[in-house]
Image (cartoon, rainbow, N blue to C red; front, side):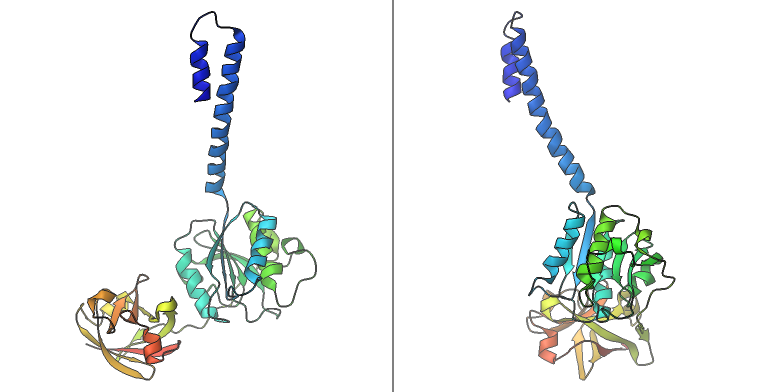
Length: 314
C-alpha cells in the first residue's frame, strides 16, 4: 500500500522530482522483498525432510524430547512427526504393525525412526533400511520391518557403525535411541548418503507370524492388539478372508476369543447396535474387529492380546 501511494503521488505531475521516483522505487522493493521471503519460507517448508518417530518410551520423562533435540541439533530443518510413544513396551509385533500401517500415508523419502528395542546393547544390529516405496527406516534389526518387507519389499539395508553418524562421545549401552537412531535419522534428513552409515546387511531379522487361515471349523486367527483407549479388539483376519464365510451385514457370527464364546452381529459401524451391545465390523484398515458400542470389549471380557480367535462358519 505504501509503494502504491508513493507512485501515485509521483504521477501527479510530469515534473515530479527524480527524488520522488527514487523513494517510490525503494518502497516497491521493500514491499516485494518480504513477500519473496515468505514464499521462500513456504517452499522450504514444503520440501523440509520428514522424520516420523515411534518408540515404546512413553511420555512420562525426557527420553522422547532428548531424542528430538538430537535430531534437530543435526538437522534443524527437519519436521518431526510423532507416530506414537506408547507402543506396548517391548512389543516388536505392535511396533511392526504401527510402522506398516502409517507408512502407507507418508510420501517417498520419509524417514521413520522406530525404537522398540528389548535387545538394546546386545549383539543385534542398528540399521537403516530402504523400502520398495522409497522410504527409510532407522531401527534395531529385530523384526520391526517384517510387515514392511512383506508388503513393500526392502531394497537394501546398512548397519549403523560409522561414528560420524552417531552422537559424539561414548555410546550408552541402554539409550541407542539418543546415541545411534536419532543422529542417524538426522544425517539422512540432511541429505547424506545412507550407504555411508556402515556395511551392507544382506538379510533383516524377521518375526515369525502365523497368518489367519480357513479351517474346517472356520477362520482361525488371533487378536493382535487393542484399538487405543477404546478397547476394541483388532484381529489379523482381513476382510477378504472374512467374506469367504459368506456373512452379510445383519447376520449373527459365532466367535471364540480365548476363553470367551459368544454370538455377535456383523454390522457396518458402532451405531448399528444399541449402546452396550457387542458387534463385529471391518475397521479402517480392512481388518475384522470386535467392539462394544461405547464400552471397552477388552475390559468387559478381560481380554489381553495376543489371544487366539475363531470365527465359525455360517
